[in-house]
Length: 187
Image: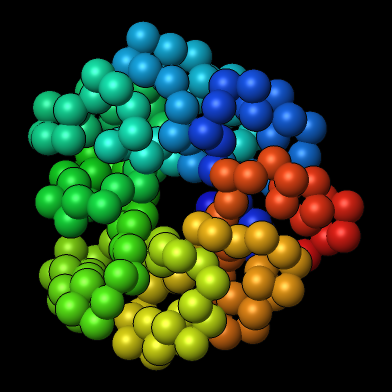
């Protein structure tokens, strides 16, 4: 299972791939590349024993539809996807990909709509943004029966620990300074 650790690196720039490969973490959310290079990135990470999740909406050239997901599953071959689109969760599961639903907590309506969607599409995990709202993490843990990953706006170790203490399975960050902090101080 990809959620064996408390930290997930979100790779937003190609130069961060090398740094990630020097860490002990096993899971990456890939948000960099294009349709022409994404397979090389996925292959490199998998060759180094890492779980790779592609954030579908962040990769130019990959369409957010049935054909796009089939292309990812059959030719790019990541372990799974991250998406804000509930419709892609169902398609990803049909293609035997792990599916992580990303939910932005901008207000109560967004949370309620997100919970409704999660009950319908049953993602493998939920990534909650921003990751600095521990009370909401605790609420979502109680309301869902899936692992919660939190990320976004994380700036220090205390915020990571609060998220985990409130029930997050893991914390994701695209900030290499946070990666360094977690690597040096441990989580």
